[in-house]
Image 1 (tube, rainbow, N blue to C red):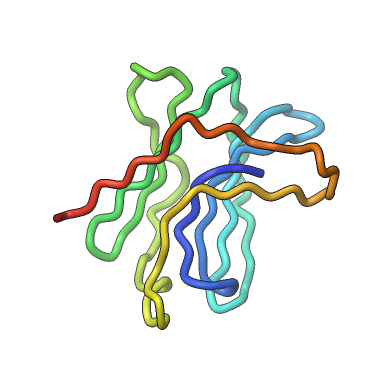
Image 2 (cartoon, rainbow, N blue to C red):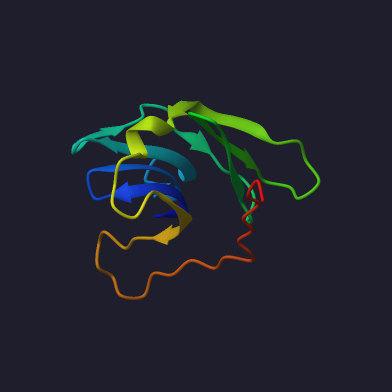
Length: 122
């Protein structure tokens, strides 16, 4: 698993990630945890290109994830709008970042990220 995450703590996050499905192959999924209740979105988006571009737009209390597989292509909406108020109230505030997880503990898994860019209001 490798992708973009909006994170407050272990119990509150949104994670849009590239993974491998035995039937579909390379695909995009979304998992979230709200107050410790984990939910895997039922949709699976097949991916066909080697590169995958992901972004998140946060506007006040809402966050929307986007995907494209070709650099000059239009961004496509991924999943439903996420409620950012679920990621508030922590000591440190929330984080945005890239994340990689090797759930099978193969020790040889990796993800290459070409760039990470953050554009704030300031």
